[in-house]
Image (tube, rainbow, N blue to C red; front, side, top):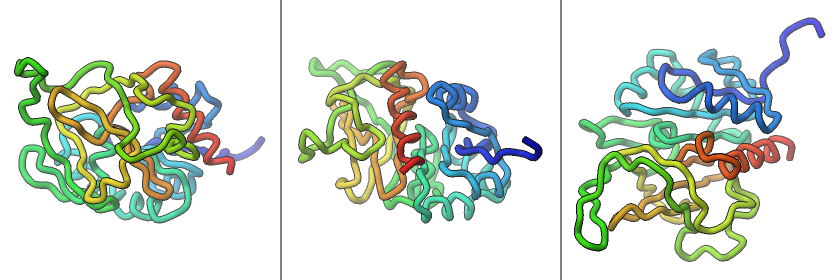
Length: 224
């Protein structure tokens, strides 16, 4: 076919994140994905993924420099699936207290706060950052079908996912929480959903076959 085929999924490139791991996960489930910082590619994609690792302040400045702040807000206000991963999840919030105070995209009301001095049941201090596999559990008050029609559909309560982080999000409305995770004596939001937006603290692209299920669910959402 002559001409360029528009990507079904735009993976936002702003200089941080496991971009190629995310693209590989998309490829594995049959999603045609493009790593891009071009506004028109992002705006024309059928779904957008905002990944990220690193410092919040540097990340929001990079998005500002690339003139992508309003672009991402437009995607969030549309009906297209929009997925934030780790730092990408954090950037969706109003503000972050990571190494100072920084304004976020303001798409989800709430803030990013530190995993401060978590301890286990014996009182032993746990390591920061939180690195490794941990349970992803249904948020309190959710029934057995609460993950139906979400990016977590098909996963079981208590599924293991892979985490690497020192901060976490706290939505102003806890009703947005899809899942929570316990690290020592700290319970935090490990994923949330609001309309077309799904975001997770864990890395589904590094979480094996169960993580790939999330990408399959995103593919299903595109086709609806």
